[in-house]
Amino acid sequence: MLNVRLYIAQRVTALVMAPFVLVHLGVMIYAIRGGVTSAEILGRTQGSAGWFLFYGGFVLAVSIHAAIGLRVITHELAGWSGARLEALMWGAGAILLALGGWSVIAVTWP
Image (cartoon, rainbow, N blue to C red; front, side, top):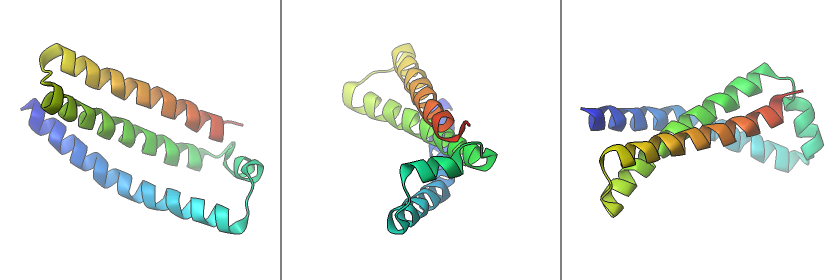
């Protein structure tokens, strides 16, 4: 039953990530084509609750999605199972969430 729930969670996070990726790519293209500097980008994102929520949601979805994917790959290629596999998944998810959260705070915190 756990594998079914993880399968569903990974598919749901993929659906959630799709609009995040499209908006992120659009913003990057706009910034590059408009000649926006990193200082100007930070001037627009720092102190913005909207960008904090946007990129925070993006990081959360990616962390869950990637941790589940790593779990599946490790099980299939290395044959890991049980507590060791679960620890890898939770550890990877926590590390991704912490690093991504740190980045979001760095870009959006005033």
